[in-house]
Structure formats: structure tokens, C-alpha cells
Length: 235
Length: 180
Image 1 (tube, one colour):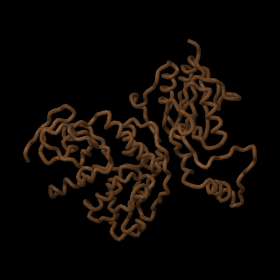
Image 2 (cartoon, chains in turn yellow, purple):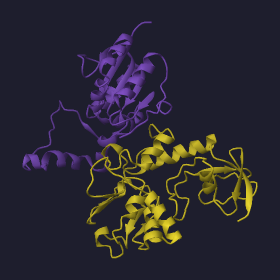
Image 3 (cartoon, helix red, strand yellow):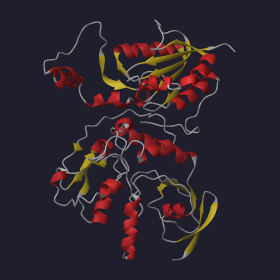
């Protein structure tokens, strides 16, 4: 691949053409916040946390789905971006039930860590309190829609890595839900292999194993990335 | 420098934040050197007095809480939302998913512990629960938020000590931001 020059946060960098802004930033230790990105699976730009400013473009673009171009001038830490990151995080918290104190993921949650990162101390928007189901029909795992932020990492991991495509997405707006097969109980799924990759991919306490209690959840999304890398190498 | 007046209040919460406040242990002496605790669930007090700082634990769940918080807002120079319930309703807000009648019935009529023969209490002396639980900032202006369920004793002391010394604390910078 040809090398091109880009400028990120006033630093002149040489990067391989064809890479995304996010990839280039991570290679150069420039921090970009993400929720829906999981190394190895397809990026979809859903969470809007990785937004960056590009000179000559009024719109903020998602770093995970925008490829670099020669002489692109990119800013990742402007006040405008910080403002939007805080708003996005607050909206995550305001939509469904994210009561950390009674969540299995308390202390190990990517959403909670994101809140600390953007300095979220309270939520300026009214809570929506939507009715969300908790699916406990699977023998080992639970899907709690209350904690879901619709990053769809579970959907993509199931389809792309496990090849089962048990998960998908139903409806729009605040009615949007993750579904198993054709919106049937997870325990009755004919496609789920019970591999548990969705559980590790999930950044919050939305998917978790039944044998743990509050604050005891330990997830390892890096395991999925490792698996993908090993497959590429034919190990 | 004259001593400041400090109040701590317990609205719709579990008092865990107050327990955590007591966990500042001997540092309460440092607080006492700078402030008098004039109103608190742990001191005798009648009507809410004029104070410099009010630490308010819990969310607004009833008519009584609403009156109280409005009075506190009038009489406190600095109002601090103390703990997750005050800041974002937390566990107390989880009843907002259900109609109030269902919540009452589940707690009093159909609870396993009362053999299904319970009655919903309705004495006039009792406070009246609002349909929905709201955080403090939805009904009054809040000057500072101190989240956490509960906030750790260190964090509480840090916030108190900064305010008592006329500084504004910054939880993010002090790396003391925490919920849950």
C-alpha cells in the first residue's frame, strides 16, 4: 500500500492509504473514544463517539468508517467534539435503565468508564423509562434489554466470527431491540451455538452469564480480536 | 473566618450516603473545625434553617420531599445533590417503569411476607408518593453534583473540604468521579 501524509492534531503522520482514521490514530497512540468498535469486526459508525473534525468539511465524521486521504487535516480533541461526546454519553444513560449500583457489570462496564472519561456527573436529559424485557430463557446466559445501548457488537460478532447470525435488530427509534432469530426467546434459538462470543463482545451488562452476581462480571472482548488474528494466520 | 453552617438531608434514598459520610471517621473533626452541622438526620433539628451548604441525599419521591427540597433551595447557599439517587434517581427511580398502584400492590398486598392479606396504608399523616420519582435537578437548581452509590468517604470529604475552604471541587480532575 502507498504511504500518504495526514495531519492529526497538528502532528504530521505517514500512514498507509486505505486505512481508517481510527486505525491511524490507534497506531499513533492518539486516543479516540469508541463503543461500537471492536477490533477485527466490521465498523458501522453507530455510536458516534469517534467523531472527528476534518478541515474543509462542516460535518463531523466517524473515525471508524472514514478512510484517510492524502494531506487530510484531522482534529480529534476540539471543544465541539468534546461537547458532542458528552451529549452522546448522556443520551446513552438517559434512554434505558443504566442503574450502575444494581448492575452485574458495575465497575467493569465500558459505558461507565466512558462516563468517567467524558466527565459525566449527571444527565441533563429526562429519562425515558421504556419498557424493556429481560430474556432469561437461555440455559446459561441472560439478555437484559435495559442495559443495551444498541452498539450491535453482539450482532456482528455472531454473524462474522461465529457465523451463526442468531442476533439481529428489530424496529427503530427507542423501540429498537436486539432479537434472537425472528424475535423468539433466546433459549429456543435454532441458530445460537451458545459459544458466548456475544457476551464478551457486549460492552455493558446487557448480556451476561447466569452464574455471576452484581459487580462480578468479567468480559474479555480482546479474546475475539485474538481469535480473528489467529484465524488470519491459520493457527 | 466565621464558621460555616452545614446541613445534611435524607430524602428518597436508603441512607447509605449518610453512612458513607460517617465513614470519613476522624476527619469529621476537620469538618467540625470549619463548620457547624446544624441540621441532619443525626442531629436534633426542627425546621430547615438558613445554611451555607446542604448535602441532599435521595430523590424526590413524594409531596413532602418536594416541599422540603424547595425550602432547602431557598435557605441553602450551596445545594449539593448527594449520591446517585439525588443525581439520577438510581434504584429509587426504578419504580418509574410501573404505575404507582402496581408498585403499592406489589409491596403491600401481594408481598410474600404478608400472606397476600396486606392493605395499602392510607393514613392522612403519611406522605403521598408522587407518580414518578425525579432527581433533584428536575425540580430545583442544583449547584454541585456528587454521584456514587454511595460516594466514597474520601470523595465526600474532598467535596466538603473544598467547599468549606471556598473552593469549587472538580471530581473529574480529582479522578473521583464514580457511579454505582
